[in-house]
Length: 72
Image (cartoon, rainbow, N blue to C red):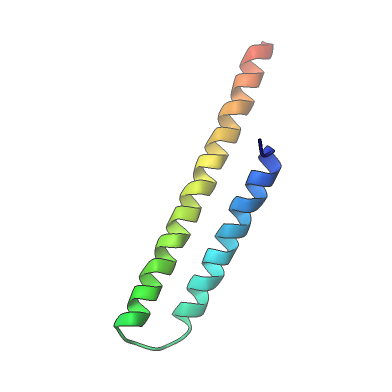
């Protein structure tokens, strides 16, 4: 099973790649159906990566809270 840190690194890397791809497409300044589709797909990738980061943060918080509650 992958460690928490390795999963976090993969999520962070995928988010950074998705954001970089979106920025490159946005600065391309070309218009057309294909460019709009590429921008939509890149936006979707950023949204998915953002969701993964949010869920990972929620999981980390829940685990920490459970550990603290168990100690008390």
